[in-house]
Structures are given as C-alpha cells and as structure tokens.
Figure 1 (tube, rainbow, N blue to C red):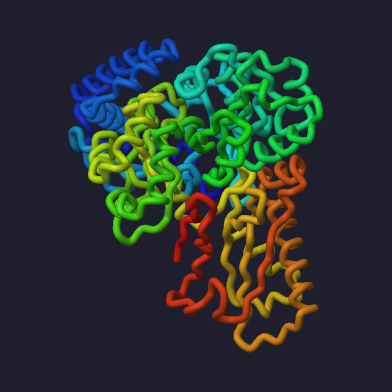
Figure 2: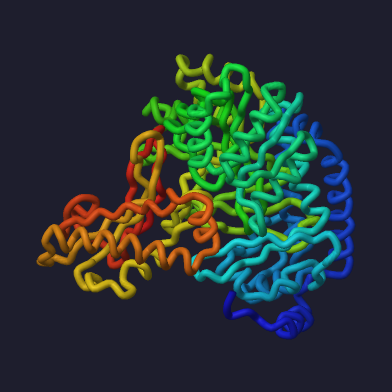
Length: 544
C-alpha cells in the first residue's frame, strides 16, 4: 500500500472541520438510532434459522429499511471513523438527511491505499482480542491485510451457515473444506462457518486426503465439498478411478467460489454430485455476500437459451450471460453506479473497518424479486418452470447479476490475474518484445469442462517471425508471465504449488489485425480482455 496519509494528518482533518458539521443533537440522535439498529441486528443473527426465515419472507419494504441502515452506517462512520471523515470532507461532503448517495464511494485505490489501517477503524483503534487478519495480494504483489473483529466474524459465519442450511439442509451434514488454508479469507472462514451447522474437516486442496476421508467415513453422511470449480472437477475425475468408491451410495454436494462456474462444468459435476452452487464474496469485503439457488441457476440458463427473456432482463445490446445470485440487503446492501459498477455496504457496526459504498470493480445489475417475477411472466411458457425452481428453496431475496471485473482481471483457481502483470511478464527480458503490438487476456475451454487462461498476442504490422520464432515466442511469453505472476502475487504462487495445472497458460500469436484483433484498435487504450463465449454462455467482462 502506497501514499498512506499519516495518522496525525487524518486527526487534524477531523478536528479542523467545524461550523458545518452536524449539530451535537443530530450526532447524539444518529448514534442512538444506530445503536438501536445494531442491537436489533445482533438479535436477528442469533441463529441461522432467522436468516432462512428472512430469505423466505423478504418483502420490498425491507429494502427501504436496509437502505436507511446503510445511510446510518455511512453517517456513523463519518462521525467516528477518522479516515472516512477526512476522505468525505476532502471530496466536498455536505450533510444531507437520508441521502445515501451523498457519501462518495470508496475503493481500494482511493481509500484503502490512502489511509492507515487504524484510521479506517472505529475511533481510530484496532481491537486486538479476537481479531483475525486475512490476506490478499493484488497486482502490486504487496499483500493487503484485512482485519475481522470477533463480532464481525461471528456475523459472517452465521450468514454463511444460514445460506448453506437453506440450500443443502443440515441433516448429517459433513463439510469437507478444500479451499486454500492459511491467511486467505475463504479457507479458514469457510471451515469455521461450516462448523456451526456441520461436522467439518479442513483438508485444503488435497485430493488424496479427501478421497481417504470419504472412504473412511463412508456413505452415511451428506457431504458438502467446498472448493474452487476446477478442483471439484479434478476430484470428480479422481473418484471415478477409485475402485472402492460407489457414487450411487454417496450423497455429495459442491459449494464453489473464487471464479465463475460455467453451466457446462456444472452439468458435468452434477452427473455425480447432487447439487453444485457458487457463492460470491471478496477478500476486501466478506465471504458469502450472495449465493446461487435453484432459481438463479434456472434463470441463468433461461437467459442463455431464450433471447426474448434475455432482452427483457438485460437489454437489447447485451449478449453476455451473467452469473446470478440472491443476496440479503439487510446484511449486504448493494447498489450500482451509472457505469454499472457494484457498490457494497456491509450493514453492521460490528465491522471493525467499515465497508461503505465500496467499489470492488465488478460490473453488475440488481433486480428485485417482484420485478424479476414480472419479467419472466411476460413469457408464459417459462412461468411454470420459474415457479418450480422457486419452490425448492422459496427464497424471495433480490438478485444480483454479475458480469465480471471492469478492470479486465480474470479469476483462475481462486487467484486474480491482472493485465498489468501479464504485460510485465510478456515484455521483461523477452527478445521478441519489439514484435508484440498488443495482447488480450481471457479464459478458453480446452475440453473436458476445463478452462485455462489464454493470452492472445498481436504482432506488429510487418513483423517477420517464422514458425520456429513464433514457437519460441509462445514458450518465452508463457514462462515470463508465469514467473512474474508467481513473483508478485502470493495467491498465484500458492495456486502453482497446490495444482500443477495452474501453470498451463495458453499463448496464441496472431498477425496484425487478425483473430480477436480484427478491426484494429479504434481507441488509444488497449482492449485487454478477449470476450470469448464459454460453456453455458459465460463470458469475460471487457474494457476498452
């Protein structure tokens, strides 16, 4: 993290803002109101069954309450979080009652990087007892540390437990946690959350340990295996070769995250698994912000197969098929900007470092349950299938339709790959660097429901590279990119250690203006991401 503002500067900014601050009475009223809502939320989170009840009985009027609480969290943070106060004042903040969009959105770049960790916490203090530090690394290679207080973690774990029992049930549930262990947010938190409603074994991404566990405990349990999508595919293939394993006797479910799950891979997995669903989260926010259901899976497939419904839901010009999740606004309030970027507010003062209107760079749409129901009702032949899918979990929560990252990042094996790192890897110590004009990054299906990162290279006009030189360029480019990614990203380095297939980065070399570069660059900036259709309609978000 760079360009951090010194703590004394933040405090000076807070103490110097007088005259136009909210009155003492208003501050007191806001603190009392926020305290009342916080107590109500703690009661609401007593047991996962309350989350399940809310999911089934959610009504549109609750959205107004969730938005009001998001506004209260923002204003409370403005009063009591030094960095947030300084950030808002620096961007011309003026107090307005009930106007959530009055608070400038935050992000990793302009807020997290700009202020010290303690100053982004309530009253400028880090509570150490019970606090857990999660880690993520971005394109800079320098790790980001995310603090989770004891109360915050308790909230996260109960939310995940509520969702999991709503989808998979809790009777004789045995959760095998195959996410990466260590400082990464998903692995340890998934294990703790599952322990509230299931028996848990934290194996990490070790296929043989999982096979041994299944054979040792036998088919008398309902297994839930949490993993990245490619790993679950490798596990299925491994179990197919195990002589002592009878799929007919076992009940296995999958819960995946970290990257998009294509419908082709879901179908392949569900030939053996009972159900496979994705969750949506982010290390800088929280795990379990949203999750799939039978209804969202049906909707995603209906959008892919019914152009008229896709036009009604997504618009005339949109051919990408997003992943679709349901979310609870009482816990995670979501908005979208005019550019279609998702803003997230975690609706709790238990979040030690508040996340308010936080932009993680994902492109999304939000549609409430009644609106989606009305859109599908325009197509009578789909209405019965919609009701049948809804009847399985009966969740009336709103939908978030997720297209992917606006910054051209792709996710693979739970790790993010950034264009800037690909660029560094391509050009550093590469004798063919002068022959490369531009590149595009994406994911490609390689058969067997497997995906791999692919980098398309466009040669400069007039470059004379014979086939031997092109082969050498492909080899050097792949090795350069992998070496740089492993050096700057601990996530990538971990993935390379855990799964050798992560090293399979595909390189395609194209003559100038051919392949995905047909038409040339009509803008000064490169369009980094190749928008290739994936199985089930999954595509990568693109940016020019």
